Image (cartoon, rainbow, N blue to C red; front, side):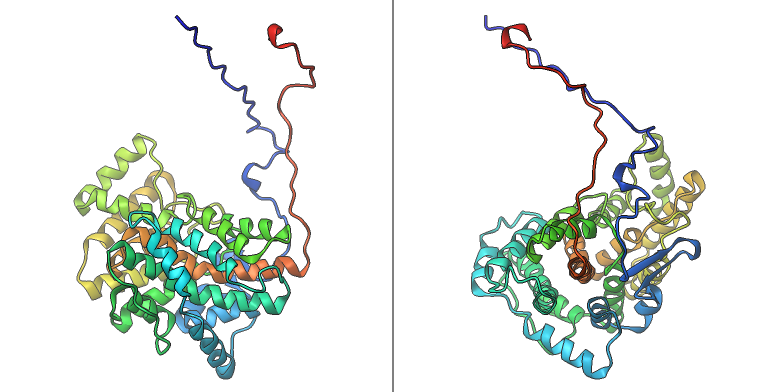
Length: 390
């Protein structure tokens, strides 16, 4: 009989109680930024000084995209020029369309989107040109073409032909057109636009920091954005909005929500859509998105999800003192708009590409390679023994 070697477990040393080590960079300030600010004391989020809820109510997503990429809100002429540039770049190449048709229809759209963004690099003659003008044009191209990529794969996953973009529609209207071949009511479009504004930027979150780390090596924009997409895909970041709706579907009936949550807490399950690394007294973006989630419920006549939302929110707050984050109202909002759950996080990308590109360009303005240190907790220095002595 052949003797099977035993597998020795790796020796891991925990340093959770070491105050000098900030795991997850918790509380560590790594750089300065003028793009956005979380005001914990006021429970507010600012984009270049503007409260995000104020922007969501009074500005289109295109205006906010311009703000994040330029530092100021546009005037009428600047907005018209920006829209024209974005709309003329919406079509994707026949080669990229052919690539999308090769993807497994059952694949997650975040995986296909990450690959498609990498492919865009092969079509950019200024790939390695990292000057401000070139990167600004890349930002507009990504803003314009990412919705087309997402919608094209969605149609492919349904066995349907892609619907070309239209340049007489705003970004939200055009995305619905490319997905469903129709544009919903202005109320639905406004709710969608609000979600894009709220998701557009949020300081040094995991995906944004990923993009800054990658571009700090003087890599290209598409590599940085592909890495950010990979980070956003995780359920502890962008993928949380998908998990929220899956939870609500699992509960199904509002009368079961309180019992479901109490059992989940007893079993120490991770409840997605609650808590935030930065906010301690509630996510500043939630009230605005909740308002439009309730408007969608009125528009669609769907009452289950708002009822489950309220029960889970109150029960979690009473049990643990934890508030919902933006993903919690956004999940059911997207579902009531008609989007399938796997599209939720790609829609997040449609919005956050503005914040990512703003940070990429800001990083390059005064670049220094991001290279943190680690505290070594492994074995002390030792010499290699002959194999027969190990």
